[in-house]
Length: 69
Figure 1 (cartoon, rainbow, N blue to C red):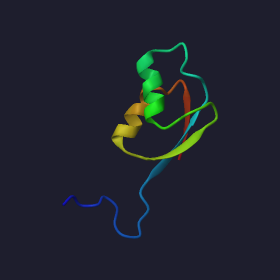
Figure 2: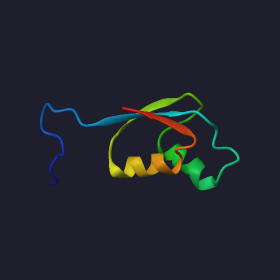
Figure 3: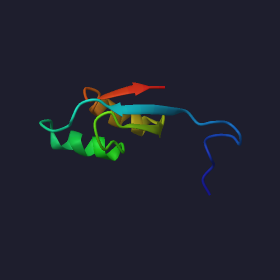
């Protein structure tokens, strides 16, 4: 069984991502990345775990989103 990264009672790091611009007119892979982040419409905000995978996706569409901790 895999070990949990956060100790019991300790909150895992989270990051809030908000879609500011439409992915229409940009590369299709960027639209798929926005969808993969769980963003559905402009000004939609989701809270995601702060992992290297999530940070990589955010970096790919950094011109379309706003990130806050």
